Length: 165
Image (cartoon, rainbow, N blue to C red; front, side, top):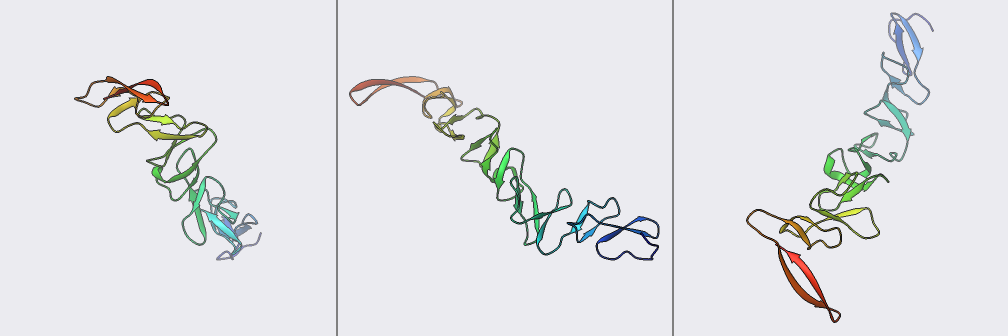
């Protein structure tokens, strides 16, 4: 530490006239702490929300917002294309991807059904508010002005009852 009128790159003013070193991964940092990076060396990306520098590519749960910066995805997203909630391309292991909206949620919301063997929620049939967990067009609750109706179809020589709105 030494007394100066302005701190050099890689240092910050820790006390009036005294410069201290930034965290080693920072190119520059703010006066609130040596780990709060404002910019990063050319071999690193700036993780904007937390003010740290990371090696490329942007880590899980973040996305690239410029050639030099990453930012966090929405909650429950492992990978995303931007910060909006509806930009998830992959969910954390504890969440399910709602295919038509690109939103990750800890469970399939009402109006969705879990695709067998996946962590993907597909929307129920357009006439349903909610459907059974076995078939997207097996309505459990209908949209307004509709009622449930059973009908029988033949599948591979067997009669199958379906409930639609």
